Length: 267
Ligand SMILES: O=C(O)CCC(=O)C(=O)O
Image (cartoon, rainbow, N blue to C red; front, top):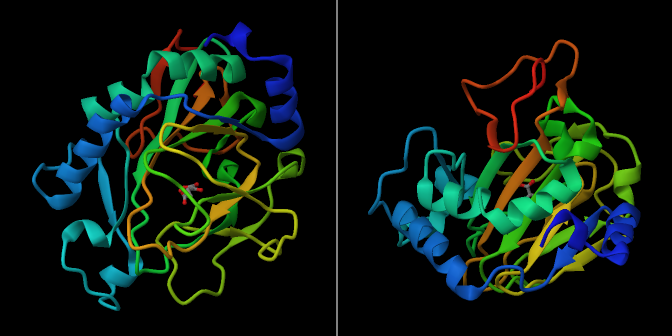
């Protein structure tokens, strides 16, 4: 896929709804090394590389729920930049970058990457939110999220839920919803908890979702007995500029040029 090979319908769908689902973008064999690497880190068989955060589910961290296996207590791993299997394999994936280029242009920075585990038997819900909240630079139109199902993702195991068209609104105020067990860093857009126009995106392994950083999205509880794994990366044009007063967070989470050229005075 190249920028030119996105159809007019696909572009129109993204412009109208704020997301685009591409079934079967990755072959099953491509997902295997990412799942294996996750299993090794989650089980403790492999040490996470420098800078990687292995995040426990809040119920497990607080001892509200005990698990037999370490992996059952892991919500996600994030900041994949020093992990060649996950970063070079997924975030720098050539065909994926070709597609990202169609959204953000030729100079591309990786700005966030993670693998989400969503184990069963915990709350694990992610309230409806807009990812732009986490990105102190603009324009929003030059940022895109990618989310790839590594396993079958259904309503039962907590697929993504989106509010089509919400990307045409503003960045909303976010807050902690009044939930008993909310994972660290999960915020919800104020006042949209019971939004009626949500759509559930059920996906097969290898299906890819692209989404706008203002799109309201979240996910429900995993009510199955298995995991619901996905890998996700966000990208921005290397031409994006920090908001006035926003401090670069390179020490904490570097933005990494994955294609094209660095731009003076930009992120
Ligand atoms: O994978 C999920 O359940 C939600 C992920 C998400 O929305 C996010 O981390 O911004």
